[in-house]
Length: 495
Image (cartoon, rainbow, N blue to C red; front, side, top):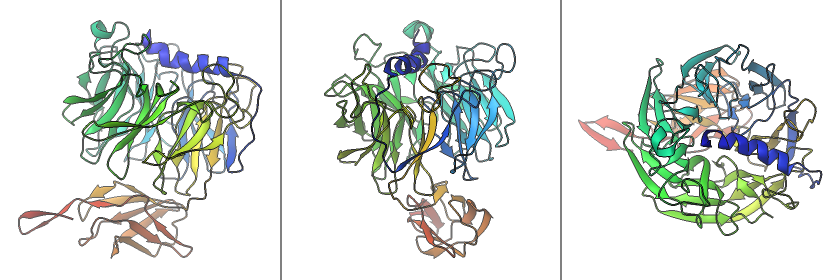
């Protein structure tokens, strides 16, 4: 059953790759916390998020009080708190085995999905407060999808996501080809697209691009078959109304089984990874334009990693950073061997392996990285760390930080808008801020906390960086704020 294939792949990979060889620890990587089973086990394909309170939130696919996964919070110093343990009741009505990233809504709550559980064992959508109060918002039934991936909140305030299975059962047999869905802020659920195999199957997380459309990949499907899998995978675009266009179908040499989330870089092109394919059949990094022109930037060769993780992040230096599940200098075992790596790649394809995991500091970093407002990267490893009370004998996983010397900055939400729009600014130690400017134009603002501010886009603002002045330093936004337009003289003027 393809519904279980990703989950099984995670477990199988961990079991077969478990070994005792070690590599030298890089000085820039710090293990913040070890999972020990009781506080969680196997943070799998999710990427941490940094919330407005400055802390990081994520999920584990196993462990916790009932062994079915957790939602957790961790500080930048490594203080780990379990907010919820799944499956306290028979049948797991609150869901079980969450593997996808969380998203913080504009209401301050966290939203996520579980792969299984609920009344039909097809997964759930949930909301959880930062204090740990969980509410189930939707229970999947197979017809509307099963095994949902991560959610995003779009510019209209609604949540969107895809499912790994369910939907069209005839085209893809059990468990179906997957769907794309919308959940309104009021909790109304709608299925926007049902995949049929030819246009893709098994949907990875979406992004909303600068043009307002949604872009994503499917793990399987398309018109080309790879090594017996039901299609090599696709890249697609979908408008907010649910009309879907296949932009590209992989064929193997250019990569196959694209995993994770695309990232739209400042050059407006999209970047992603495939689990397999490329020159050595160990995965690739690719670039694709909004029009669907794809270029392979890097093929992994085992020594520099294998099976890249769940997408990349464009950092403040303009380069892309990501992880590989296996590979590295000690790559001598099955499934690509090694314990995984962190890599850096430019938009032109210049590649550097910047960190090799050595089991003691974690192994198999399947999830991606997040660059926090302190300039450092944060992530998790699926295994390694503590070995007691773990679901498999490969360690329960770790949380780590990784520093490359990048400076602190501020994040903007939203990243675009008209003059007069309220913008949330997230940073590190913004207490005592004395000035906020949008591309040099002073803005009205208020400090909400040491990590959050609210500002109003000034009337004369133009597209450019937002800068915060505090008694200690000046902080600039990681990306320019896009001023969409201003209304003047009954005409729309682009800024």
